[in-house]
Amino acid sequence: MKQTKRKIASPGSAARGAKMYRSNLQGVPKVAGLKRKDGWVDMQVQFLIDKKSTGADHVVGWTVLKPGARHERHRHHNCDEFFIVLKGRGHIYTDEGELPSVEGDVVYSPRTCWHGFNNTSNKDVVLVWGWMGAGSIEASGYEAAG
Image 1 (cartoon, one colour):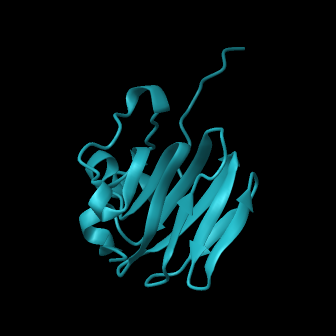
Image 2 (cartoon, rainbow, N blue to C red):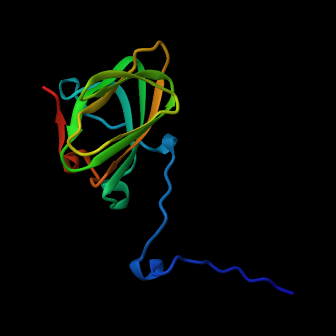
């Protein structure tokens, strides 16, 4: 008996032209032009999913902070942000000051809340993060604490 394979799409996805998107860290370039004066201190940032790559109104990113690297206090006026500490430890910046952060922490910052991360250790910190409601830095309403 011959078996036939068929693709199963979620309801309405074919009508919308929806397509799955897949990326890999190895093929995604690091974001260029991130300036220290804007709070990006020695960070390696990759946008794995964003408006440019998929048309999405969100961003999923990957960041490596070498020892001493940090993302200074900042906020987004147009989106919420989360990050997960996959590897390492340091301090998160909050409205109340700095708090210790370790591997496994999941942090959520609603729009307009000041936040950031400082690698205070002697090993790399790896974060996976996302912006919900904005597909680019420009759309996020990014503001560095001055």
